[in-house]
Length: 216
Length: 216
Image 1: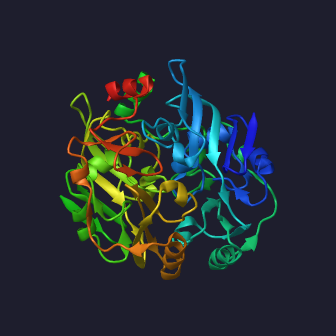
Image 2: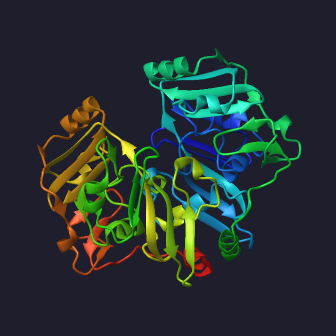
Image 3: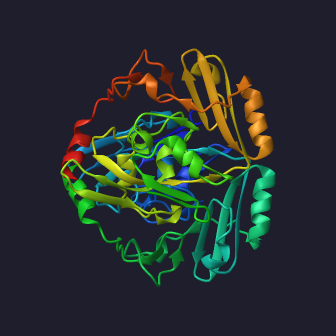
């Protein structure tokens, strides 16, 4: 399942959809809340881990989802449009819950408008890009990446400040994580939230969050 | 308790702090995620109801909070800065939970930069302002209000499109809600999410959200 509404600026897709399939499905002038690259677990994996490389609040870009809770119960959370966010929110706790609240079935993402996009890479580490205004910044080995979309002049300004060279190849980071994409030091990828390492390790689960998970 | 960090762009305050006291405490050039007016219940009431008049995702502006859950347990959720949003999120479900997850003690809000702000009012209803790019739009009786902050030219553009006359008086809407500020039709205020009526009525609580509340 993959449904795009350009007028209401959302995309709804099965959790197992690869990220680059979503990029292929979105019409020109609209953008997704992740950079154009492939990660383990597709859309469901991305949302379960709380996004990748974003420099903004990722939770607000997930408008709604259905998931199977640990009890086996099917949960329908959130709506399809921004104005449907009316409280009693079970969407946001699912985002970044690393599977503890269950497995997503379908996910609705907000799309945002942009005239152009750019992806640059250069040698460096995240510490060198603290002030970057790019929407996405991440480090792969010793290479720093930035992806941005928006108005023409704004994208040019952000990329000029970042430096580096344009990247045109489609990146597939799945082979970096044969045992699953988890958090941890010493792994091949890093963003502002975590180091990402092979093996699927998750951040420590607070006891109270475990109680919430058990209640669903 | 009221603590402001201009460098990290956050404000932390007791839940019972009046909204206009927060406006008075914030230094020039930084803005709060609500318009400069007073509502029942101060900061805690605002967050419990999921904000007022915003045209953006209010949940992302609440960086963290402490609250007393229905069980009497004290819950510490979220952090103080944007990058601390790392998953296992109990902040966002509290926002807009209309008291069902408990009562807030202290709340940390994100502050956003702006060079100037403007507040205009004109006759009209929310249906007339669907396309407004103002950060806050609300209707009081037959009068439509817009509040915006940002760069000088942007604020001017948004307010020119909205029309109306500048409002300089501090608005206190508390007397409109002697029985509490609840949702419902026929009340004196309206924003894009709800009609707001006297009496403290809350939207229907989904069964699953009640289970989450009982687990905390």
